[in-house]
Length: 343
Ligand code: WQD
Image (cartoon, rainbow, N blue to C red; front, top):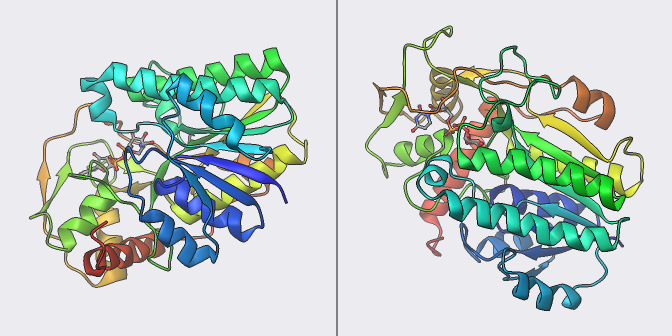
């Protein structure tokens, strides 16, 4: 049984990936300092997977803490590295919090990989590295434009750090550039858990439909798109989690063909904000109060993935639809609202 360390393993994508890895028979160890999640997520993972993985609460950006913790782990065959701060707006206000946390934690983990180069390393990157791409759909070879935020810059620097370390220390890694992860596990036991006012569209939609927020503001209706609202590639989080298991197997089977392989993970289809609202109302029967508001600074007009490389090399593509993601997100919202533990 191979051991996989999932950093940020109680987070949104981390928890969904932990479930898939447990279901595929891995010995999963989670590490999460609860900076942006709740310990109760572990109960949800156990409820779905039927086993309760080990979870360590460690600040991965603290060298002394990592030094003391690492020897307590079983031999690690692979690391799936999610742990990072990820709020674009917050990163503009507090850039050093982002550079310190996101880059130091990655560097400390890569030092362990350098000591055991057969260890697989999966890096959680983002389509944000492309900025406003000139050509759509966006392929992996699309130019990396200057980052629009310190958060996006930590992803760009993180990929460069990965490239340099993989070449210098002789290990193989994969960087996965997510488009817009949405939805929740169909069991409604785990899902997106934004603490405070949601920054992302779909949790704001579900909280508005649940009456927690008065109305959704649609940021901008004058974009050069089919209905004036911005376009994104919304990928179901379970599809995303399954892609991680496929990429990990590729590394563990030593079939990767270059020190760092990069894959875009999206559906290949763009949806406007209004189409997301229509999908939500169609698939849930709920009514969503919304109104137009000014554009949000830093938003790109359109971004959606060219999925050819992931299909060709990983043999992976998305299976779930936008409507399914909306229904799963709504079911999760209702579960969180109705559950006794106020996670
Ligand atoms: C989607 C669309 C908004 C909220 C960001 C990060 C990216 C990744 C995902 C971490 C945009 C519109 C949103 C609202 C709205 N994060 N919107 N009203 O900005 O594409 O991507 O989150 O990895 O790196 O950049 O996602 O969900 O914030 O916005 O109209 O209340 O919804 O303008 O067009 P985004 P988002």
